[in-house]
Image (cartoon, rainbow, N blue to C red; front, top):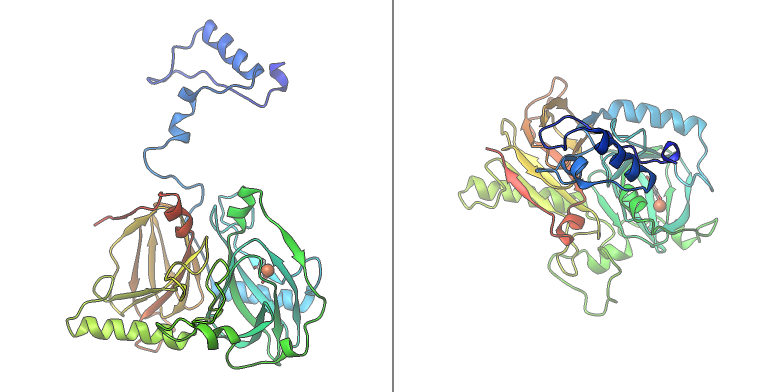
Length: 377
Ligand code: GTQ
Ligand code: FE2
């Protein structure tokens, strides 16, 4: 019975559609009854000439996120079941789902003084990035890893992890995961861990075991076991990222090149074992645009989420444009052109550059041979 069929076919008068006749209407009712859909009514949507994202460009202001996270800290306990006090960015055109883009989850997570987020593991690949504050140790596979401003902490799927605020201050940070992508795969697993961490796991070392083993530039430890999927280095400290960008810009200044474009330095967080992306499904980068510089518009397949780490400026994504400052987050949907201009904000007094943390789903697109970039200038 066609009245019960979820298939709905509308005969339309259009140059590329068959002439609407009673015979065509009967054919379409026949398709509906048999749950059939012809290509000719769908091709523009299914096989577009250029990528078209369901997501839209959007910006979230850090001040608003932080204020709400602080309120959640006062009234929402953290523990088993909910597992994390994490509040996700919901792209306005993705149906109210907690998806920043069709593939990426981005959330602010908040831990009160002395609180523990319980141990668990899941197939989703994850990372933390710290835009301000300190005091939380994330314990990955029994290794307590400190989290400080500017640190990037990847954590590949199926590793046990818990978070522990060892200080008297609350702390906020951002999480990025491939939750929307894995939702589509229907291949996720999740397992709760122990209710309490051991005494050794509640210590607060300055450097994790993973950093001591893997955190030396260009030096691979010979005795270390083959790393799990994703990077064996559990923290990329700001000190090294900052120095890499500073050196890159100084080399450019001296005429040696090395930057992406004039006034725009960038680095990718890489697996120290083989130079690949830090996570199977997520790429992460830090971009520095010097005061007064503007980047050329670039389109890229796949989607990205950015967080302003430092400085201020104006970001243009397709036909959206926003002023941004420290902590603000914005999304760049697939194939939308992005350009950024670094300029002093009203509240900035420093003469620094605009530093942008970026994460994307690029490794997935690269693996599928779908990764393309295009300069629009
Ligand atoms: O910290 O383990 O934002 O499992 C979402 C899912 C954070 C986490 C999130 C998670 C976590
Ligand atoms: Fe988790």
